[in-house]
Amino acid sequence: MKEQLLEYRLKGYCCAQIVADYCLKKMGKENQDMVDAMAGLCFGSWQDKLCGTLSAAICMLYLSDPKEASERNVRDLTDWFESTFDSVECADILEGNPLNKIEKCPAIVEATLMELSDMLSLNDISESSL
Image 1 (cartoon, rainbow, N blue to C red):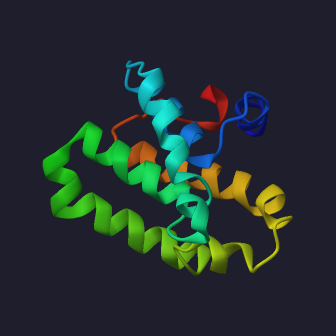
Image 2: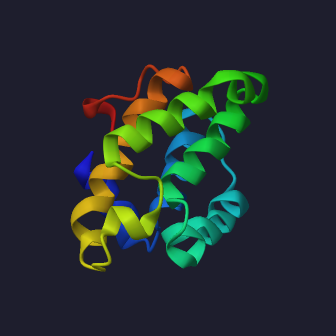
């Protein structure tokens, strides 16, 4: 998966765009306009607020199944994210160090994509398919 994430980064995609494009493809959909628009969620909406990876993942939950997203999945994903990364805020996750984007963000994206696999019924998301 690390190679796939690197390919996305070389395209200039941020975390939110990677999550959106990857999930869309796994759902058999394409929507470049949506992927481009996800840039607005990058780096905590460019203000170090809610992590773009989590924001994009929530969008993908709603795209996949709005009812399930509202009733359970968003809460479950957010709880998992916060317990795994100790916060949902970019500023906290990155600890005020911009270099942490290089170290922490790829692992956060990877772990979040794996967590989404069950919620989105994308059972083919695995280390070998990434």
